[in-house]
Length: 229
Image 1 (cartoon, rainbow, N blue to C red):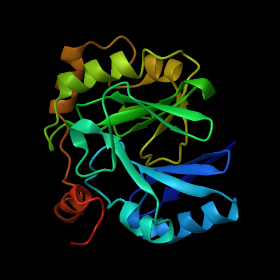
Image 2: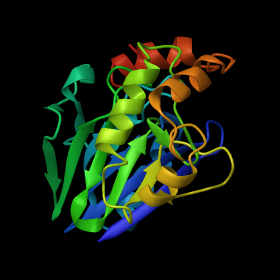
Image 3: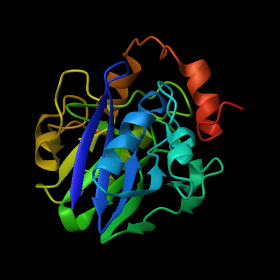
Image 4: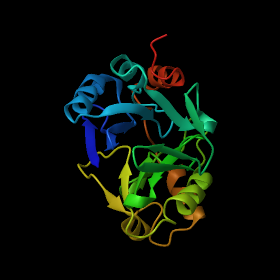
């Protein structure tokens, strides 16, 4: 079994490479690193069968379209509510299988209306995109964001997993790489430590964040699967 956590320094985005039995997937690929990632897949003797998304990104363009140039049979995979022409569209709690790995799609809306976390139950890990970050969470002030919905979906579909579950986020801006359900339940300053939905909603409403620098370019491109036209 293969696992790699890859990094885009420009946007502090994590891309995850999972491989098993000769097949591999990338979760949240980045267009500017598609050649790097394709090269790693080949070095490891794997065939990239899927590019999986956690949501429609506002800060970078998916690498799916460029990766298909390296792996023509690659499929794009997303939650049905944000499928945007993906080859494989899964309902909530649907499962995508490759090699001997099964990834369960769990709808975790709130950061955007179509956010999805991917859970690998057999290996005790989940890939949470921007819904839940290490000691944080995704913003809720654009792309149909909803703070109350994010609180509910994170607690029902991520923090309800076993306490030892490893959580791998879509970004980190402080050099951290992984957390656990137990840590975030106890220490997340927005969602954890017994904070209720009213407190969380207030915290999110008081954030004053600039829009992502590439939102005007990234969102339309990601609605096309990363294609330039």
